[in-house]
Image 1: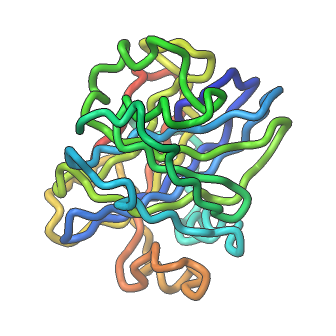
Image 2: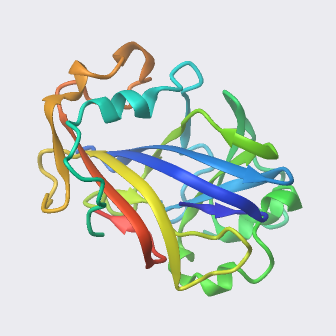
Length: 247
């Protein structure tokens, strides 16, 4: 799922796409349905190298391709059952972080936990939250500002440099009420394209019968999808350990 700066009433139908490269870069696209009583931010921790520059993350506008995940899903034959498969130096006193318009969103890259002080207070997690998540001490964060009420938003997407080029990262830790719970309810579909050199095991991944170019609108993908590579899918539902997923 993701981390929210305020309380949300519901978050469902989360879909995440990650694409691997031979370079340290990774593509990530994210979609969900949510309901909230006030404006807030969705915060996605991402494992970037230390001292990553503020302009190192490239946000990608998919507002003209809201059906990105619908088309991605069309590449997979329907299963017989619906059962899910298994599972830098702080710039706290610096200038405000750059805000980028990305379709329906405003987005920012926050290089370190300390840099959250450079964002509007409404779009930060409650004080002390990051102390409970030591695994993110060296992470950066992609922040998307969302409007209140109920929404199905067009996919949020970006490209970022990875601290470990051998890992494909899916941000799935849940923080919906300002608290870090040991377990969380998952309603996720994960999609991936792996580089051929990736040391992967596909025991829990379903492979698309055709390459992605056969079912995706490539002229709208903004380079996110490799037309010649197959896609892979995994469904995760139910109550699971509250942690990110690495492939």
